[in-house]
Image (cartoon, rainbow, N blue to C red; front, side, top):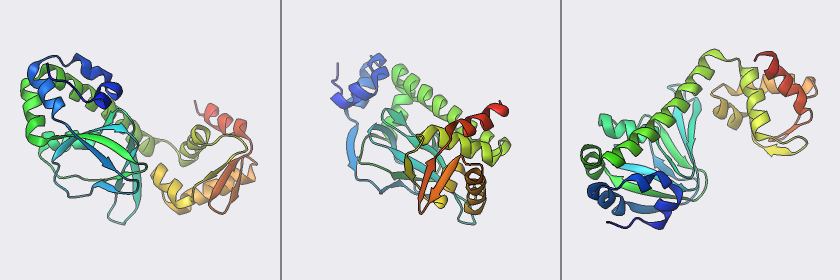
Length: 224
């Protein structure tokens, strides 16, 4: 039976269930890539040539509207795959978004032809691909629902609760936060000022500090 790269076995434990010869052979051929931070892994309009599995590091996937406004669609962390990559490979489509490394990333790439052979001939690898695809697709659908149905103050409060410890300054600009939340900078700035007036946060130049976490939590609880 073909041996897998140690990083594949470590960060993708479910691949241990791929026990057919063809699936193991395809995985053993996966190319290990290392990409420094701040690099584009794929851009809008690029053809999709490889199935990607992130073994270490983090990639953010950003969508851009015709106005130039950006939105963070999702992040791919250690042990993750890219839902857009999978969709583009299966649909023979070009990328509709851009993937950018936020840290040094180690990722395995399976060429399109071998990916298609895996789907056709390896039950174990096919299960892995579709299980991973379904999980990431559910995350993307939750994002769409939040953007469509949830107020910006609730999304902002949730972000601050999840990412900012009380009394510790977080380095993030209003523009960066707008991208994270899929909103306009002006809207985010107004809401931050409102939170500051409530005494929940304090704002500095490119920084946010949570002063009263309970206030933000109460805002979310009231809408629960």
